[in-house]
Length: 351
Image 1 (cartoon, rainbow, N blue to C red):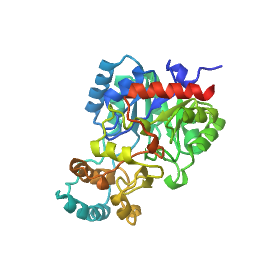
Image 2: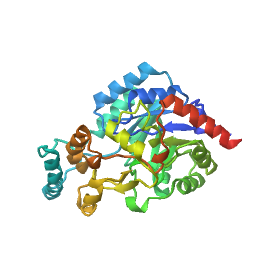
Image 3: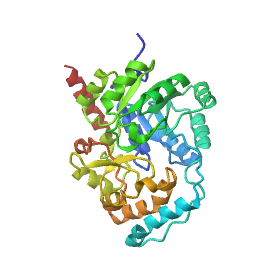
């Protein structure tokens, strides 16, 4: 029988730390998780190529264990003036409330994916994972030639099949419970909101490659349940957000500590792509406009100054507080201790 995904990387438990972009995933978090016997992942999507290189070097200075890097598959957008003007006009009252100037339009709305990928290939992490799109066959070949395992994100069966056909080493099944941005790239985002256990089961039944479960997994019992449904590993993000190694702002951590069950919602209001986070005043008041906002990454770039100023002012009612449905069960413990607790719970769930 072939080695399970988690055994291939000599992990102590079938646990992957989700690559959470926007500063949440620090080199310290990645290294602590990998050192503890799970698989750490650097969120490279919003980093310039040089920053990816610097953060990878920091991880390697802290651990000799394998880890991965995640990137968003995206091109540089060219929005029209009308949609930019609408977005800026809707943001204006929020800028005035915070006392900040309207943002200057960025030269580019996201990091150059091609350059990020070339940098990552040169760095040769154990794994590369991809979200928001799918690689070309040439890009996949380049990963294979560099000896890097490839994990694709799937929110539906069509996406899982596309990654399998391309030759991915594993697929990450992103259930609707997952915090942060939806990874959908085939079909409508709202049509790809399957519960995690159901999606994992369907992908595991239909794909010839390992499935990693993601969404709402907060403890060892959740890990065991996902694996009984066919997962070979589980990817946890929200579970690590309250760890001291997480790089999120103090107001965000405080909001997570207070969050109860049912505190999250899906919104396009901050970034132009559906994402799950704690509901707040900005999301509620912008809900009527969210379908008219420019798509990610344009809206994400335009709202960046607002989100930064809100964090600086401690205004969690105007921040993007990304978190998954299991947020009420997040623990405030060091990452290595969390991995150890999860291992014990997972083993107990099988006894």
